[in-house]
Length: 438
Image 1: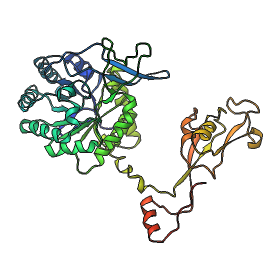
Image 2: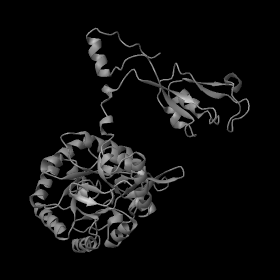
Image 3: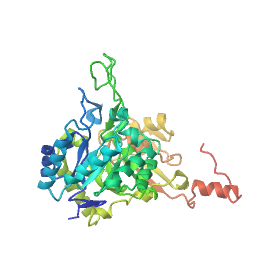
Image 4: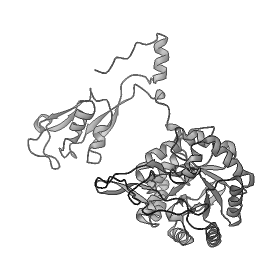
């Protein structure tokens, strides 16, 4: 069985799965339940000067029968006293000495940062996460994303923390910024030990068309909120890879953003994460999900012959390059398996209206095929014109049957040619311009 233990900048945990700072990490009771279920770490709900929350606080984006593909919230940092939080951190750490307990912090002045860093250390926390990401409420008070969106400010505050920190410091980055690597580089310059990303994305999920007020509603008004859940995963993966690939960052990464199963976890690890933080999936399904995540990730590593997650971390980072480096002469086409095609013809509609018009509808007799799985007699079936197919993937994406349409590489007989090479050789007169697509 593969070794799932992790070491993020000196913070050790028995597996990479940490409960992210948020509602599931608000109390010692929850931390105990999480560790009993199998989580490797907990990032405590952000501690600061206690605030007063509103009701309601959450809203969700549903899609079809799928509930909560996206969740947004206007809940702020911990509304419990620092005394209570630090006392419970000490209690949890004493009972679970081999699990990671990280104190998430958000205060304002240099003196307060020094105080809260020292109190976190005294409580026995394994590390500190600086919350520079919350896009609602706290940013209106000059904290949260108001810090994360200004790398110079984030660098200054992180330098305050590093003046007194004796345990690892993680800077949590906001995605509500043009270039997240600028903030990551600022964290590095200030001496931070690691970064975590992404925090929530500024959002409005929906509008009630009877009251004309978005959810969550507070006495007839709403507010911009922080968006998370499975819908943000592609954005998170992109930003994690960007930071992992940037040599000026060079910090360990704790990945966050829509992680709900072992496959999500493996993708975040492959793109450079060392530990993984989960919040929305716990709010949806409970702490129990970590059992499948641990088992699934372990089985996947075994199937790949990897002895630890360290062999997976960053494996996919170098495969993401600038568009100009991609091979213009590489080609693949769509091919339909008529043993699986149900004749819905959705691929034809998508290609005809939304792509490149390279699928025809032909009679089954012309294709010399039978009825197949559920096809209607005499109803035309799709046929890809491979000579015109641009290999865009759309037909395979809309097809409702797994592996019915596969994208197949075909030889072109032409040597690899990137856009940058093409421009250079064209300017030198070595090649003729490529003909435009008809």
